[in-house]
Image (tube, rainbow, N blue to C red; front, side, top):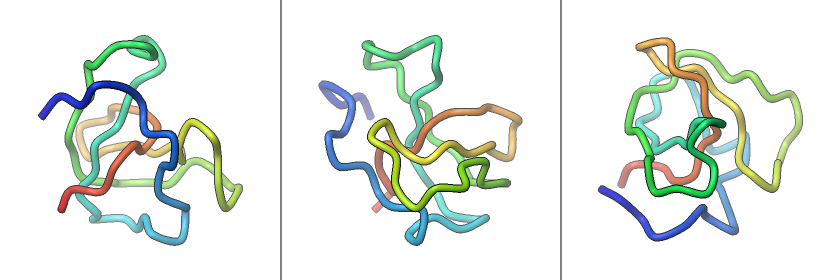
Length: 71
């Protein structure tokens, strides 16, 4: 799934738990539609909300900011 642009209203930290399936954007891909789907291993952001999305580490080691939860 490729969405048109970064989510202007990414999910809050409270909606993200280890094991949650998400779409993330990696820093190197900001401004593109190169999103990656994965399972959250660790939550790296300590804040409740972040304008670019909560930073997480996926099971495969990818670090990115959550744009959407997988429905």
